[in-house]
Image 1 (spheres, rainbow, N blue to C red):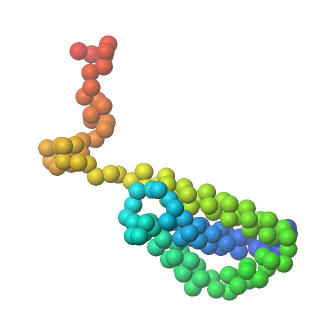
Image 2: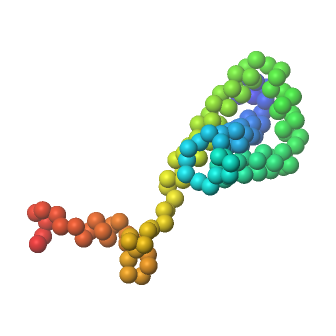
Image 3: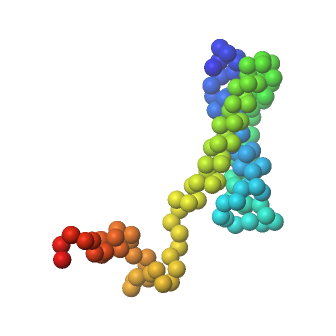
Length: 135
């Protein structure tokens, strides 16, 4: 990558992290994922995006300036930067639209067992009567 663009691999990884954070900020009003909204904007992606940008800028200021100065010098670097942004959009979309579905949801009061917890799906599955299996 460095031979093609003149930019080190670490700087490209840094650019990808900036791009993911920026997409989280820009996309937070547009995603229709569940979550807390203030004024129609998802709060968590917005906070994570701004926090990520601030953390990267404070942690790697010299590398950020080096990358921004070098990316406009070669046409190949601009093409690679566009690809990095495209991949970052996909990563941010994955984080916002898919990851919340994996979190355990709270059980409603009618789903709770005797101890106040939701019964496991395996236990519910094992209690079913299956034709041809035992009595």
